[in-house]
Length: 266
Image (cartoon, rainbow, N blue to C red; front, side, top):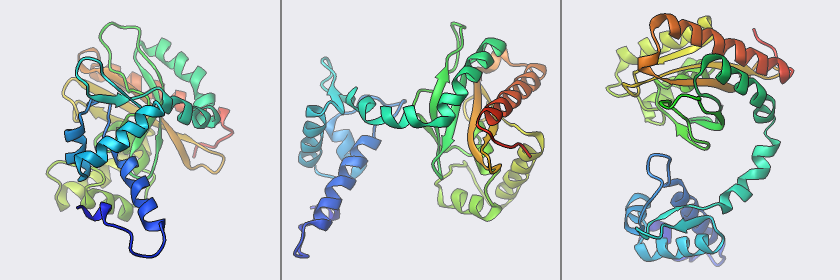
C-alpha cells in the first residue's frame, strides 16, 4: 500500500478525500501532447499507485468523458469532457480573447505559427494558437506545458522573475537546464538580461535541433507580464536575417496585445 493510499485514522474523511483528489489529478497530468495515449500500467508506474486504483480512477473519468479508450490499443487518452470543464475558463481568459485577432495577423504576416502562452509559476502553457499555412510547420498544442529553460516563452517569463527565484527554479529542476552548474546558471541570468533589453527571446534550435522559437512579453495595466506571444518555426526556414525579422514582428504583436489589454510597455 502506498502512502497516498494509507487508510484514514484521523476520525474523519478529510485526509482520505484529499488523497483521492490528488491521485486523480496526478493521473490526468500523466497525459501530454508527446504521449497522448497511455495504458493503466504506464500511468500506475508514473504516479506510484496500484493498477487497481488507477483503473478505478480511469473508469470514473471515462463515465464523465474526461478520458476515452482507444478502440484499437485499449489505452486511454484525454476525452472531450475536459473541454466542457476548461471551456468557461478559456472563454473568460481576457488575454486569449484580446490576442486572437493579433495572432491571426501575425501568422499571416510571417507565414509561421503564432501562439499565446501564459505562466503558472513554473511552466509556460499554450492557451491559443494559429497554425502556419505551410505544409511543414511547428505547432504548440493547446494545453501544452513547457518548463525547458531554453524555451523562448519560458525565457520571457523568467526574465521578469527575481534572479534568486530563477536560481531556485533551475537548481530544483522545476525548470530544466541540461548540465546546469554555477557557471551556466550565471550565464543564463545574463541571457535573461539580454531578453529584457532586446524585448524578445530566442531559442535557435537549442531545445529541438529542427525548431526555432521567438517570444515577446504581453503586459497588463500594472506593467507586469500577463502572457507571451510565441512564434515557433522550422529552423530550415529561418536564417539569421529572418530570425531578426520574426523577433521584431513578435515584439510588435505582443505590444499590440498589450495595448488592447490596456497595458503598459516599459
